[in-house]
Image 1 (cartoon, rainbow, N blue to C red):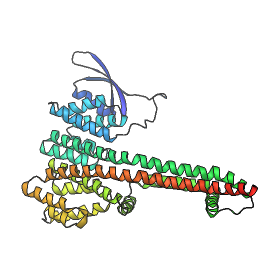
Image 2 (image 1 turned 135 degrees about the vertical axis):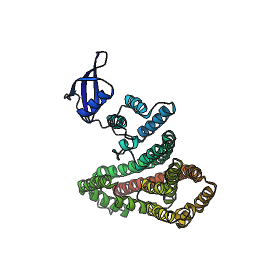
Image 3 (image 1 turned 180 degrees about the vertical axis):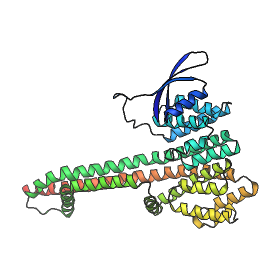
Image 4 (image 1 turned 90 degrees about the vertical axis):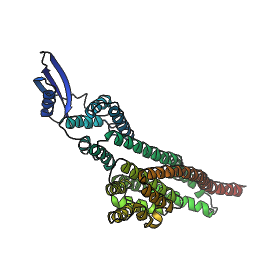
Length: 403
């Protein structure tokens, strides 16, 4: 996208100057033509040295997407056109990336293209779920309702993940603080005491020998250890979206007691919310299953949902397809979905199930954190006490030998 300045005249002969951010000069010309303005000049705006900067805060966040959807839904509900809605949101947008996307969307809408086609050009910003909601609303003429459903779904998922991340902050900080304290003791404190102990002819306790050995190893290989940790961090960041990495992490999580049960509830909550909301917006069951499987990531449920889709395509009911997957989906879920299919309210049942599992996630998080926090404090206390004991014991022996 480039910024162009233009000078044009209206039917009354008045001169109008303005500025537009468009893909090319032709788009500016087309826009002015639709406004019934006579073009006098169009020039690309040059960027000065002061205006050149890298906006690290321009990426579109989850909150930006939620507000975009809710604003568009409210504007359309008020009776304005979608094009007018996009122009209003564009005027209020502050982030460069979002302004660029909305500017392109406005021009595409003026050309007669749907909003979903404009947003589909940015897969890193708008997920397949986001696009599916828009396409369903555009196809059925219920874009307002689809946007409202999408807004609720995005808000619920954002709140769920915020609860998970929020609950993990304190344990993670505690772990890193503990590692930092132990590392400082081992690298800076223990080596100084070793010099004192080496002057003594007393035999050192085994725990002191152990601590000194660990300290010597860390001190001698500090750069190697830091390098390995740095490379590992870069590798995790680089491969975090890779299929093999997601599957590996998923397998590890499912083998951790307590955490595996919580992880399953999070997946079920997200899956039920996405599937139910897609069905409520008019997306077909097969397409909704396909999108839902991609949305929950590359874990063991990905292949399971693909199996469910295959069974549903063969004519098996959704509830029975869930039941055939064994422990992956609890009996309560398959039973309630069966009831929903009989009453024609599968979408509402799934959304209710999502609410249930989100509440279960909230309770499980509280219980897990209340268990982890004292356990981490206990482990940290034992480690620090062991180091202190390893240091104090030979000092007492040294004092005793002097007497």
